[in-house]
Length: 261
Ligand code: F6R
Image (cartoon, rainbow, N blue to C red; front, side, top):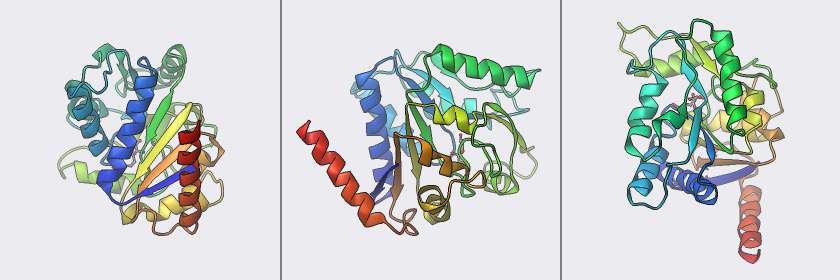
């Protein structure tokens, strides 16, 4: 796991967007795994800007989102489809037919989960998976106790997640308590993973993910088993890490090796 600590939330977005752009420049038909929530919003703004400045094109890129709520239609303003259309897809040159999210309104949700896995496999697998981090350590909607080998499936949102996401719903709106999510096993099959986290409310989860034991009660710790994960965090989210100096030395070495190759 490569841990990159930067000054601010804005720097996290720039660093993350640059990694995604590098991936797409190297492989224009790259398959990107994408996330919703507050964390990637600034990264998506960067991608929109770079696309509009013709620095990168997403015409051949395919995307698969991590998750979608069950029981709300894709046109609902709370759906993750609406989030992605509004924050990214409608603003860049991607072909909408190449953007995939699980269908949370499918009659047969189990069949939908299997179909989603098949679509990812048929696309050749995910080249770069972007992740946020729940303050309870979840990735996608793989809540604490999820199997580290789990696949795309229906998941029950934890109380922590329901509370955290209630900020998006008014009291009279129905907040879904179920979702379809890629599993941890699905996520670990991505060739590269980039996880971003900012703010003091993520510090505990960051510590558990990077320096804690591998445990189903800390789903993000599963990334310790992935051999191409970059964690990009701001100083506040990194505040509980014990080995920041070492991570910084590792990063200097990586940059030096890249410059010499
Ligand atoms: C979103 C997702 C979640 C979020 C996580 C962090 O598609 O899968 O794992 O990444 O809940 O959310 P924010 O960024 O809102 O703090």
